[in-house]
Amino acid sequence: MLRSCSCTEILKPARSRASIAATGMFSTPLLLSSENGLDLYPGNEEADSLAESLKKWKPWPDTLAALRVLETHFQLAIISNVDDDLFAATRPQLEVDFAQIITAQQARAYKPSLKIFELALSRIGVPAHRVLHVAKVSTMT
Image 1 (tube, rainbow, N blue to C red):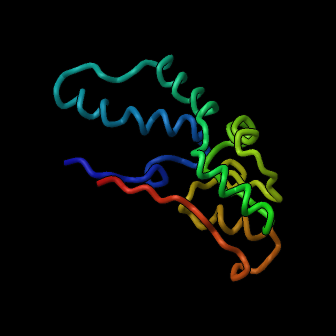
Image 2: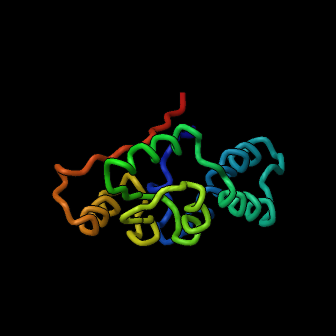
Image 3: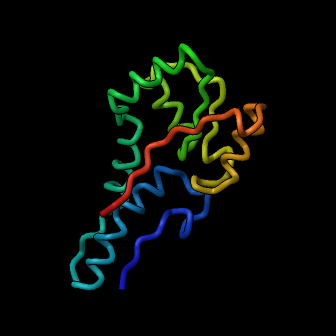
């Protein structure tokens, strides 16, 4: 029987987000291929191409619009479940300035671990009750 689990349950935080994304994207085909005798697991080249493509993914248009409005009223910080180099590659696409950037690599933990949020609070330097955390939550149905 298969069950869904988050990357934080099965992978060490020291692994890159790109590596985790590639592993996660290909874990279902791997499980299916094992059960059915099919060879659906991609090679390293395919896994690397997915990881490399993450740097080119564009933010949703409503995200950019919201960030632009929020930037005029608040100091923005970002807590991102990525490596420093991956965020550096995608940061220009967000088109706003961030007072703080906290990555999973820096915290050595992925959301929803409290460790990444504790690092963010320590860097932001304001009490937790003065911080608003906004995030998109995806659920699979």
